[in-house]
Every structure is written in structure tokens, then in C-alpha cells.
Length: 212
Image (cartoon, rainbow, N blue to C red; front, top):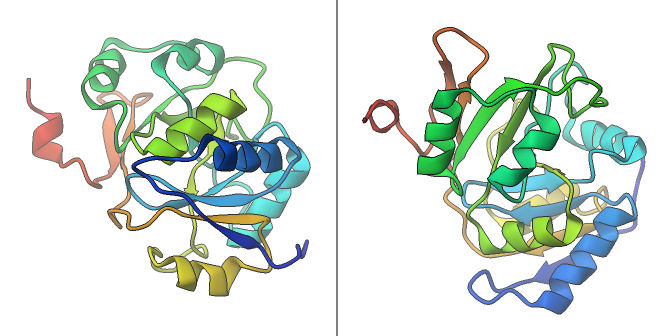
């Protein structure tokens, strides 16, 4: 397993994120680094999905099987066209209502996308985060960003930055301390199923999804 030097903890105010500090994060990601960053749900393990070396590191760090796909953040709905074969009407409705926000939508991936953007099942999971730090990172990176939660596979979710540092500090390149997060994962809906299937009920509950 790759072992990085002990990661720096970068404190960024989520209400007033520093452009200079965000630029540091983006530079690490562009160079193939792995960072831990806050979202409105949980802290995420982030790297550039077009860097296969970094993706391999991410899977090793998390202890995740490579046949288990990773969800991604995109900066806005406009990025869907580059990665999704088609957006069904329900997908457009849900994206309009809940994006930016804690809802991950699973689509059929566009033909020709490389692993891991396109899972072995031909699907891709995407969401647009509402967290100011995550959004600014995506603006600077201008590619999708992995958003698997910053915990060991099969273990409890982590929300305390110091605990995250204890577990991942020697394996990742940078940890962003963006303060408290909700501690509840995003809701996941698979739009490739008929009817669409809720794979995980997170912050957004099923009754809200069923509202007209």
C-alpha cells in the first residue's frame, strides 16, 4: 500500500472558504493526490477519477473491493451530458428539486467512459454537493471528484476530523477540517431500474421523494 508522508490538516472556514487554500487543495488533486474533504453529508475521500494511480490508492486506503463502484460529485447539472447516456424525466425532476444537496442519482454511464467513472455494471452515481468547500473544489478541478465516505469499508461513518486523522493521516496527502458535518449519508436512487429504486435512504427520506 502507498504510504504518504503525514498529511497536513488544512482548516477552512465553510462559511467563508479561502480561495488560496482551495487552490492548494485543487493543486494536490490535479497532481494525483488523495484528500479528505467535507460535504453536507459526511467527509469524503477525494481524488481525480482520471488518475488511475490515485484511484488505486483510494481503494487501498479505504479497503474497498475494486468491483464496488464509487460515487462522484460534479459541479453542476450541466456536467451530466459528459458522463451520462441519458437523463430520464424523473432524474431531471429530482435534480431540479434536490441538487445541490444530499441526493445521489445513478444513471447509465455514457459509452467510452473509463473505470472507475463507468462501473462494471455500466452505471455511474453522481450528485451535486451544496457544501461551499466541496463546491469550490469542484469549480477549480473541473472534473468529477470521488465522494466515497472517509471511513474504512464496512466500518462506521466518521465525522470527527481528529479521528479521521488518526486513521488516515499517514495514507492521504491532505485533510481539510471544515467543521461539523451532518453525519448522515446521501440518499441514493437508481434511475436505471424500472421503477427507480431507492438503494439507500439517507438525509432525504422516502416520503419527501414521493411528494409531487
